[in-house]
Image (cartoon, rainbow, N blue to C red; front, side):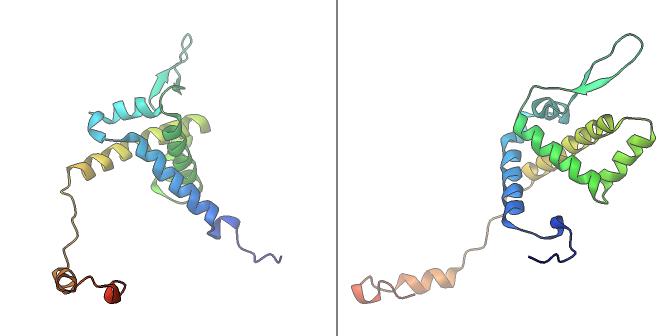
Length: 156
């Protein structure tokens, strides 16, 4: 096996397609977005809402360990990928680091932003009228007059 000089992530394979399919299924755990009146409710369900974990004068926030862990995992992976590649998510993450946040805190903030974007997108999609494919009347009518005799049962 020769090394082609390309990074492994540049080479699409079935494992990556399976992982992307699994992530889409994980986002399906949201179900009907109408259940979540705001992004805050979705964040609580996905365990990306900040929880105060302060002690004394130090004010900190952490992520909840409750909620839908599969959905949280999908959002976590999306946030992590956004920090690797040039994207608005990476810019947001870098601004968080520049503001003095730790890497964990900056990633938590990015997950929170992604959850809000997911809620916004799903809400807009739910409000949009459904897309119905046009009917092909010719195709339907060409098959309508044909008899179902044994000799032309398998003909197109």
